[in-house]
Amino acid sequence: MARAATTSDAFNAIAEPQRRDILALLRAGEWPVTDLAAELGMSQPRASKHLRVLREVGLVRVREAGKQRLYGLDARGLRPIHEWVGGFEQFWNESFDRLDTYVQDLKQARQGE
Image (cartoon, rainbow, N blue to C red; front, side):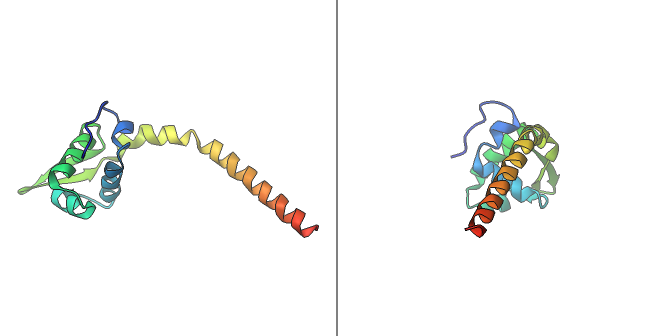
C-alpha cells in the first residue's frame, strides 16, 4: 500500500522503493498512469497515489494530452539529494583507494611466497 508522505521533501518521497521505480521509468520520457501501473505491476489507484506524492515534492510534472495525463520527471527536485549524496564521494573514493592498496599488497605478498 502506498504510504502518505510524512514530510514534503524529496528524501521522504524516494524512501519508498516503488516511487524510485517510477522515477527510473520516467527518465525515459512521459508516461500515462495506466502504463506506469501496468509496467510496475500495481493498481492504477496505487500508482496515482505514488505520483501524487512525487508531484507534491516537485519530482514529477504532469501534462494534459487529450484525455490523458502524462507524467514526466522533473529532475530539478533531485538536486538536494544529489548534493547530499555527493558529499560522500570523497569518502567512497578514499575507501576504494584503501581497498585497492590492500589488494595490491596481498598480490605482492603472494608473489613473494
